[in-house]
Length: 222
Image (cartoon, rainbow, N blue to C red; front, side, top):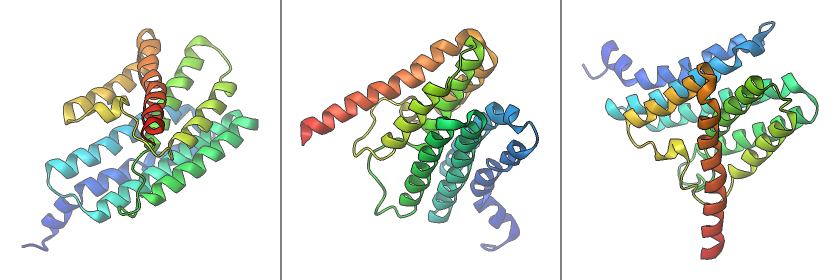
């Protein structure tokens, strides 16, 4: 019974969710694939959160599942960053390569829990901010290249900061309901332009505040 097909499927529900989260990335490589960037970022964020919720709720956490989640995150976040960078080209592409390198290094460091960095920002924090910034550029009709360069560069640095970022919105979501609300906020930002500036200010503002606050505490404690 322990090795029955049903038991095997049950134990891998969260792992299947992780893999499903990266499958739509193939749409980005079709002609005109950039048009799918926004829904794919949202879908990937939902599935990335869902796999963790399922693993905890069903008591099926495993080292393999954690590693698979990190690998899927690296594949998705590198692809999404580079697709955005390639779309705008020039220095934006260069900055996206910098961010993609940071994503790979951070994801690799997390494969060994004994050597994982204690601080820094998760790679999907970059994805949420990338989505919000591109949505703002579309809604307000401004050229986002300069802000994208700053976004990619700052996140590439923050992924390896040796301190905790205390008030990141996703980090404050401690249960399934709060995590779901974070994802609902991303959908609303995409579909309801009226709330986009407010939500972008919350997500990006708390990130910048955390950078300053966490860095200040770390410097003070040295």
